[in-house]
Image 1 (cartoon, rainbow, N blue to C red):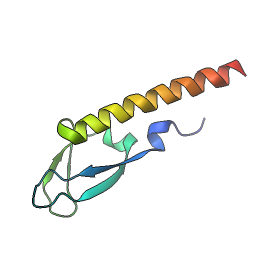
Image 2 (image 1 turned 135 degrees about the vertical axis):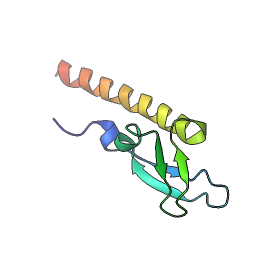
Image 3 (image 1 turned 180 degrees about the horizontal axis):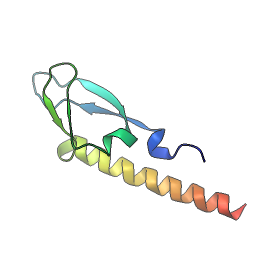
Length: 78
């Protein structure tokens, strides 16, 4: 079987440090497995479970699961 949608989709996470705010692109499949990461630019901690980053990860993961469910139903009907 091919890659699921979370393994194909990436998201740009913003550093929580107001003096940094850099964006870091990561695959959604990786983001949903961790709750915190270090910013490669400033070394600050980035919370992946709350705030804007957490909400984006949660909502995008839900959308990907919905897409995968629809694709699975479609392939079963053929």
